[in-house]
Structure formats: structure tokens, C-alpha cells
Length: 563
Image (cartoon, rainbow, N blue to C red; front, side, top):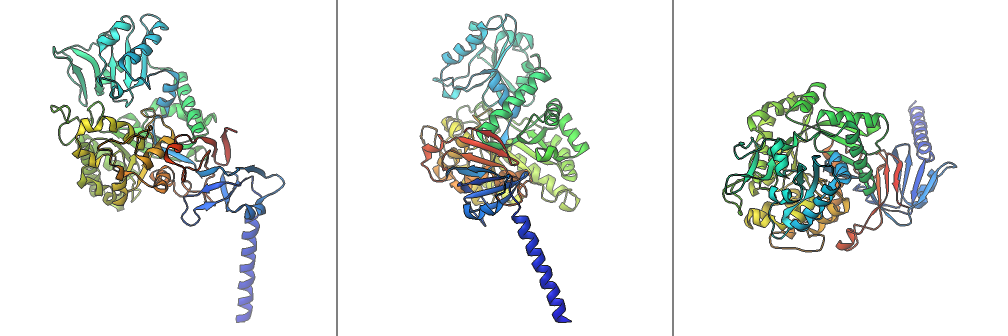
């Protein structure tokens, strides 16, 4: 009897092995051969070939072993030694803003006030009198002298058109006199909570509006039509795919934009994966709390399970909330843009309903306060009362941290969602804003990793260029794109290439609860691949910036190919 049972068990095992072998040998739809594949999978870190069936990876290994997956209808792509990595994810960007930057007056790259005004003047000459002129991308910290423009500067070139031009970081804007008049902003207009109207020595508005003060003018600008807004979305999506991004995590949206996203996905106009956040507090957050998350809609292309809170301003415009005054302006330490007591009920409800929270916090005071608020919510709603025991809440930017707050990220299980390019652009002016001592906790990637925290990486486009190679380079080199390092840049905070790749892939997937489907190249996971023109894991640092995406694969579909 025992022998009979053993024989039956042996037969079953053989049958199972045979079935697995048959399934394993099922022809692939696509075979990628002769690749230099970095899988980010510790069990199999490197490979030559990838097999794809449908939208998922079925094989990772050698060229020789891949031949068993080659069938009559298999498409074979010779990568000719090109480097393949898991599809890049931009963990923090603004997809509509990226498209608008490409479509509208783009003021990036202006190196002087004169250059800035010349670009605006060109647009004025093309615009009907009385029509609004809007644009984005200027940043005065690269000008000499590094001073904000004024409404008087704009009035000289645009006396009859209202002008409203947003700083690159989105946390400040300059308006001319015509725009201020439409918005009824005068010397007597009080600062709104969470914003500031800059004024000259005579008490008159200079035209510079910080954070929520921007709304005073922005609310008077005729809004774009849904058609224009959708076009901005699609332009942004196209650019992201061509850069090699397979997913973007959109850092905030209101209800109208969510409707546009839904219609575009319904019409199959978007191939990019989008992990979307709803701005809160407000209508968008309220609706998400009421109806709950949307997960893996449109064949794993759209998820919305996150509330985005903006908690302070930006460092460049001195709106970031600091624990001590700004070194170059001792009468201010920035400000919070939300009242902590108004966030607590929303945070606790989010925990109970399984909603993730991500909060923009740049200054050390904003970071400490938001970590305090997160901790209070975690204590108020124990794991047993939560829909998700480990909620993976995030701090977006986490740029300036005090030494005592760095270990709190790992302790609380809070993810640091950071943008490496900020450290190679902000640090041209950060020493002046903060002083050398506070820079020890600025853009502190290595310190956070050593403490056990998870860092996911993004670009914050259109604040930055939004190119994955710039982000990767900034993380590993911690130098300007010209190779510069200066006092206070803390080169010891640079990360290894393996760490940088993980920040843009597996950690980004983890930050979106997607690590079982994305982030590594291994059988069973979605076939999201970024194919690069050079081996970014080995080439000299300056060569990283010259590397380009030559193919983007999302769910087994080649959605972009440069060759």
C-alpha cells in the first residue's frame, strides 16, 4: 500500500513538473535578446534576455535558455547590447503642468532679467491687447543679481496686457499692474493665510505673490477649456513616454482634472501608467474618502488612492517653513500653508478608509510638524482599526531635515519621496537661504537610507526638467550638470548607482503599493521596460546625462521606439 501511495505521489509530481515545463515553454509574444539587463531582482540581478507573454514577463535569463520560448509567431527584438532596466517611475510630477509648459510660454533657461523680459516681450507682440499672457519656468536665482522681477519691469513691455508668470517651483508668481488691477490687489490688501504679497519700501505691491497669494490673481484668469486641458495632458504623456518613464505619480489633482483623466483613459488615449493623488483638504479629497480608492483600473494603468496636502512653500521664494529664520532674510522663517488642527480629522479618516496621504514639506519646521501629525494619527487609529495596517504615508520633497527628525521616517514607516535634481539646482542658492550648518540635513538621501528609510525618486516636473537621466545623475554624482560642487553640497549624501536605480524603480513601486507587479524584471511582473542607449551603471558620470531612452515598453507593448 505504501509503495502504491508513493508511486501515485511520484506520478502526480511528474505531472506537475511536466505541466509547469509546458507552461514555461509556451511561446512568448516577444523575446528581447542580447540585452544588458539590470533586473533590480536580488535573486537574479543580471540577464541577457526577457520573454513577454501578454502584458507580463514570462522569462528572464540567458539568450540560450530564451530559445525554448521562441515560437513561429514570436517577435524577436535584438537589443544589440543595449541596457534594459525596469520601467522608470517618476514618483512625483505634475502631468498637466508638464504639457502646459510645452504648449505655453516656457521661461526656462532665462539667465538674466533682460533675457526674461525679452521672451515675455516676444509673446506680448503676438498677443491681442487686453488678453492675458501667462507662462512658467523663470527662476531668478540664476540671474545676476539674483533678484525677483517686479511689476514695473513687466509694465514697461506689457502696459496693456495683464501678465501672470509663475516661478519654476510653482510657489511664486510675478504679476504686472494690469493683472493686479483686475484682481484688486492694492497696498491695503492683506496677506491670505499661507501666502504673502511682497511690497516695496513704500508699502506698494511689487507684483510678487507667494504661495496662496497667487490665487488672488490666478482666480481672475479665464480657465482653459476641457479641450485645452486634455491637450496639455496628452502632450505631457507623450513627452514622459519618450523620456523612458513607464509610470508617473501625479502629485495632486482637482475633480475637473480627474474627469479629464478618466475620459482620456476610457478613450484609450493614454498608454502611460498614472498613480494619481487628489488634493486635500477640499472637494477632491472628500470625494476620495467617500467613494474609496480606485486601484488598477484600465488594465493596471490608473490608480487613485492618495490625498495630496501642500504644507509649506518653497525654499527659493522663502516660503518653506523653517525652524529658524532664513539666513539671508532674518525677518521671516517661512510659513505653513495648512492649519494642523484642520488636517488631523482628515488624516484619521484616511487611515480608517485605507487612503494614503502624501504631504509636500520642504522646510525643517514643515517636515517636523507633518511627522508629528502623522505620528498623532497613527497613535489615534491603531493598526486594527485601519483598512491598511501599514499605510505607507509619504513626505514629498523632505528637502530640509533636522538631524533628530531623519530617523523618524524609518521609525514611523513614512516614505521620503524626493527629487534628486533639486539638490543640484537649489544648492546654488540654498547656502544663502539656510547657512552652511543647516545644509547638513538638506537633500540627505544617504542619511535617510542608512537610517532604514525608503526613498522613492521623482522629478517634480515642470519645476525641474523631468528627465530620468538628470535624476539618476543627480543622485549618484550630486554635482551640477556642469560637474560643479560647492561648499555645502555634502558629496557624502550621494547614493550608489544600485540605490539610485532602486529609487526610480522598486522603491517607487513600493511607494504606490505596486511592488508585486512592478519595480523589478522577473517572471510574473508587468512587462514595463526602459531601454537605454548606454550602460548607466558603469559609464562615467558625465556620460549619464548624454544617455537617452531608445525604447519604452509598457505592459509588453512597445509604446515608443527611437530606432
